[in-house]
Length: 400
Ligand SMILES: [Zn+2]
Image 1 (cartoon, rainbow, N blue to C red):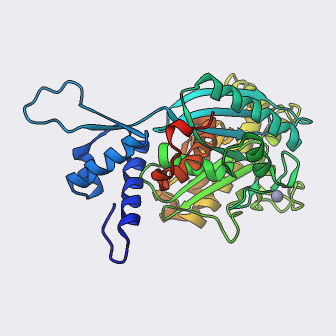
Image 2 (cartoon, rainbow, N blue to C red):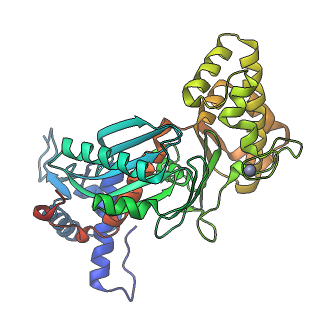
């Protein structure tokens, strides 16, 4: 809600109001001036002035509503212009996804490429991403690119995007974000995949309107991103939320962090595959095969899924007791495990979780499926534009 405060300059006030208006139509879609006037708590002439300024910057369009039949002057509909976009990049362990995402959230172009172990060195990844970015941008030459957001499966330093540690890519202290920015000639920002997943669910997924959110994503490891009171939980330097390394079984096997029995050693993809008698390392396709086999009645696959579901419940219990989330969104293979064994996981939770937080939490598979980190990366890239729309480069100077 934009409010007048004392001690705030006219220029800053105007910037804040433009930011509010553009953010509103970016997240909620076309909105009438009348509704914006009401929702942002500003008067009609201010909304008119802000809309005109945003239209001149090429960020929104204003049109008469369709099907207008009533008397009186209709309220113009303010819509985000889809020829403004960012590039979203999701660096996974087994694939790279690049998408051109328009203001308003529509995916204009999308490319996906497998990338295997042995192709994870930073130079190779930067080159692959650069080719894919050039590809999506050349498919839509009329679109202005405002920046690039990247999701990385590891610890990313806030500020400069240095990848401190991404164990499943074998990256340690890699200035990936800076190298990519130099290669692309565009502003690049990067974040942890689970943190961006939480952001995506909060802005566009199942956690819209909910301020206490846990997003837990499983693949080889388990990542966690949290919103507490509507604010992303970062910790002292941005690395909070490593729920994969909650120790749940002191008699368990060795984790890649050095400890024994971490949650991800009990519920990670490779544990499910191994328990089911499959070779580890098969990725999402192999996991899907085990889940299908369990559904078809294969005993060993079913027992493996049961065991992973039980340990999933044990970790979720700790998350619920610690954070009292309104919603836990599961992504990656944890979403599939949950959908296949929801009752079993709920039984584990009902047994010992503290009663009040247990009764208040909604647990659900991500409606964005595997794309939550990608959607979050797009939102990360839009952040500077939304914070200060007037900073936009004029259309004629748009990046070629
Ligand atoms: Zn660990």
